[in-house]
Length: 342
Image 1 (cartoon, rainbow, N blue to C red):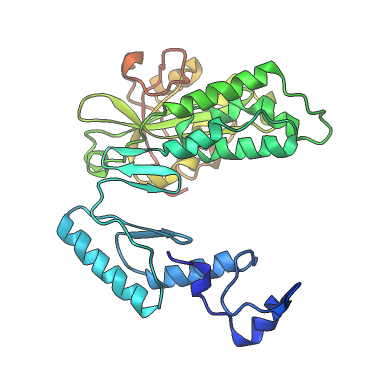
Image 2 (image 1 turned 90 degrees about the horizontal axis):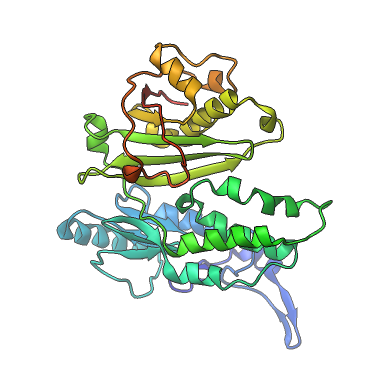
């Protein structure tokens, strides 16, 4: 949007509260200033009110994106959007019409899927080696924004996060520098994250595949779906570092806890669907073979509302067709699971 915050008029009673002093005298804002703590939230409220119940339009602060299946519906949506913006007295910068792909919030969205914006990644790769906690936080923040493209990221950056603790002396070791270099190299050639094909999920022809991994340092998961060409491609990568208490769990608890966390983390995709879960833990394969549920003592398993039964053991695809690049061993468990609301 054009001059986004400055399109909002400040209420007469609050104008004196915006006063600031300069060498030329005292000035007050008549339009909403940037830097005010309430400005972003209020601007989002105004924009959301303008596009409310308008299908095919999404916004983030002053960025708007319109998406449709056909050119005719796209024209209709654009007309409806312009009418809404005119009604709310909001002005746009010159927009791009009918594009087959668009850059939005550091991502490039196209019919093939979602990929990284090269300019944003280039800025990350050019960041200097961190010399203090502030610079390290800036680097980790940039990497975390694109963590959906990085398998098992939480486990791989755990040594770096230890430097954020105040009692730790800041020493950026060569191994830490190598870890950052590898992550940045992966961001320069990341996978394209495909869109879920819900019709294929509903009819069971191509269900979701959930690959889970666990270690003392972190949980990791990959949600993928088989494509018409027969290859399983990623929809999203997720990960988190283990808590101090979780680092003392048994391997069975870690692997079961990883599956539970992945299911709960991805419940927006998995709720009410059938999907296949894969793990490389032999004990979980045994539970599926004998048709038993994972015992309640396995960490976190009893926090899922429904009883989840692992079944339908099948031969694991060859690693060449797998999309879990962090999995180094053959995945043994092929379990069909139905999940209710979590």
